[in-house]
Picture 1: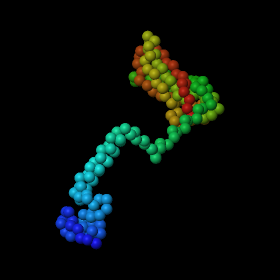
Picture 2: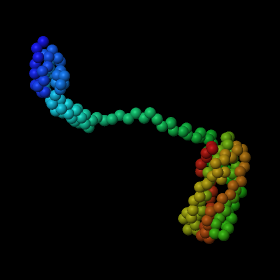
Picture 3: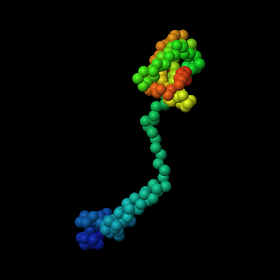
Length: 176
């Protein structure tokens, strides 16, 4: 094999050597005439083109989101009672004015077949017929009244000498 001169470092290299042992230049093959400085230009251009292409295609891409931690299903609705407000009757209802307020007392008769709570609506009317106040309340709070029983209740609200009459009636039923 003959000796040839490396075009970069000018050293004598065997014509069969794939690279120059002095500078590493490729001496034979398809890239034999390519300077190592070419790589310093071509590689950054290739990386830049790759980055630019990736950024322009991502503008048109709509990402999809996968929720691994899905929310739990909503809680089941409370069972509807097998009764209505009309299954509750009121008796012995009295109104007692006390120091700028009015106390209401009475007995709830529960004729519903299941234990349930009842909401009462207390409306007070002024002498001119206008509504003075409305008070919605659950006499037993969040406790079910046992079926077929009587339940004594009372509550208090601010009152005025202008109040002429009161009404109280069951408006809603809930099983707690």
